[in-house]
Length: 419
Image (cartoon, rainbow, N blue to C red; front, side, top):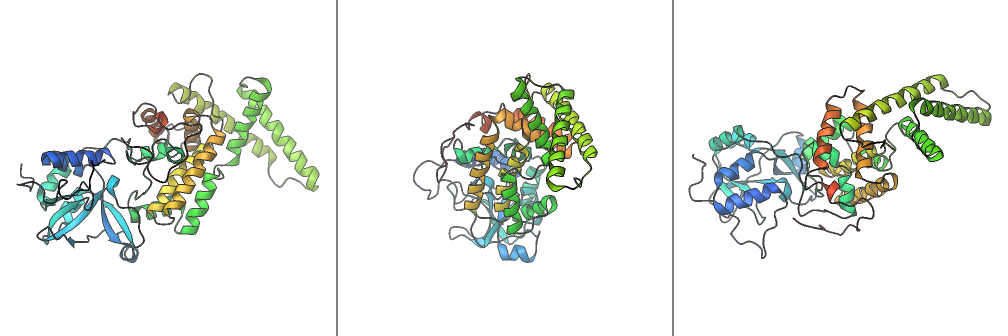
């Protein structure tokens, strides 16, 4: 097959590399490096076609024309002709002012590739840089046969065991479900424009102030409806008082008594009617308890809960989104890397105060997600989480198997481990 390469890459991994062995950050870079070293260009392009690629761009240019992904040709002194840089996720440069990266793929590059560009520079400026001659026709063939990457992605050179890794792992259910690395700190995510559009569409966030406000609230567990947590805390109080799980009727009756007592105290202290429909609140709470019990029964059937275990809190639904939001905000350039790092550490610390392990945390997150989105349909909002839960409880690279829940070591300034 004509892959556009007759004599191997110019300026490839063996040319003027830093001293010491190359530590690939993810499986993608490992595969590209090995293929380049051995001259296996079929494997090289098969990997390249199946992964996200990122092209650099000036931030002011993108802001002036949002959503338009353009090319930025450059000249390399060792190459004859213009080059276009693309980066894989694990070797993206750290975020710097004035520059962003937009997500694309090899199929798109093949469609729009101008004849004036002679080289595709894959991860230029890194130990794994590889310059390949332009051949968009061959790239299209690879793109049509491209497979899918596994959902579980780990940055081997990123945080793996410390408190920062713990805060990152709090977002693993969401990030693994989306096919993103769970522990990527210098986050570029879906690319600058896509991250901004996603935050606008799902969260109505379009500015730094809005991002930081949402991030603070999520990290504190303030976003989930208070009635969810109220119902679960009533059950926890019954367990502490009687030493066993109450049945559904006992739980509902206890919640009703608490609501009646709180309303009586409010009326007595203010001398005015409560200003809300108490009977509607009671019925809503009783119905909510029924929903929680039915979800927990399904959780046990699907292995999300074991034996008599129950969901103790749904604050994980906020903590998990806070962990992801810290990265999304960095990708959209609404926050700085150090702000992302602090938010992750805070999120992890708050989660450890509420939960006793990854199993409890996962059940709380999934219940919150289902109460918000699923409405007992047990559709994709639920089944996706069952699938990701199985990955995170079995994959050898899962943070749930490597990041300690209690007393993780303090986060270092850099990576705390490597493959």
